[in-house]
Image 1: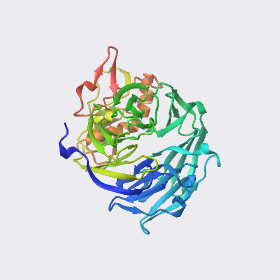
Image 2: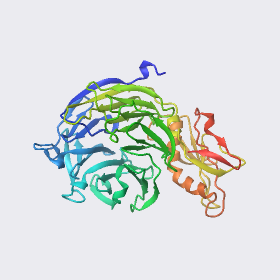
Image 3: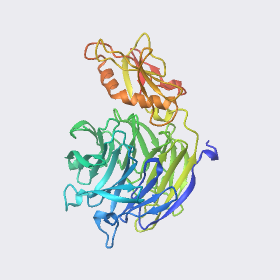
Image 4: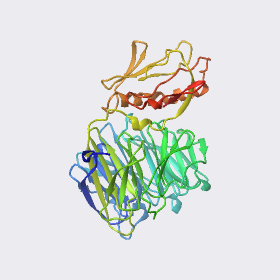
Length: 466
């Protein structure tokens, strides 16, 4: 059981949405929150919970105009301290707005026309960004449209550029779209269980499966890319992403009105999930056990299909909104104070299984050994230290050092370092040998404090969890 001081408490109620909210999204550091619907978009500054005026180009008018009715929204934050809001409309228009600290206002700096102007199928139905906090001056965002277009663009402070634009077969029934950790694009079919991985440079199909849950209205992918969770209407189901193997169900309250529209988001370093319902509340689940931790009540009742979260070092936010057509909707913001996390067990609850040859000298539990590419290349050891840094070394000689982007403890930093080397590791380890016939090294990715059962030994090889 969770004590009362571990639960979320209502901190604000935001009013003013005249109709159903179709999406909610926090900006970086929870500075702003945006709500979208056929009423357009509304943004609040969470420092004082006041609504921020938006430019007339994105303000809905009467009679309502499809190009100003927004289905989805996402945020990016650049190191130059620029918040960028991306809005996708029912007509297919995409607006990019930036926040001016000088004028304390949003300004439209790009308006992108639909892929197929005049076609009702150009409606933007899904969007994702890579990353919310842009670390290398270039961000990326991908959109999906009702007629099956997947459009990947890069974004800098200078503007946008198309990376690829493809159209999937109508039989796929394109729905959610998500970035993988290496920036490949995953697309999910709303019906039929279809899942594809698209190459980040060309849009070519790298992998294709038809074993996903049915339906898939919303999807989230874990940071380690070991699992995804899909909203299936009645509940939420977790699958291993590598081979689409079922892992767990997060049960809904039982009442079903709108089958495929409920949002789900991770929070608190992926140790919890927050999902919408058709029953006047959102539900907070424990990621590992699937148990309900808390229900977040929506006083107006009815559909609560839009949810959002933002996790900071010492504070966590969850937002929920009403989703009943032709009825006013409120946005409730819940808040919880906490100590910085001491482990990341929630991040590795559903690991990828990789078979590797046994070695005589396995690394320590907090070290990662990257496979060498040739006989002369050194084998880097990635070690998480108590001061929160991750050191990449050649034996005792320091090779490179990373400061984790968040100020969490060493276990979380370890996962950040593992993510940097994961692609090379999996490619080499699945082959069993590198290009020169050198055996791949073992990896132990079980952080201190995690369950001992997360390390299992097979008869001919070790089962390693990433």
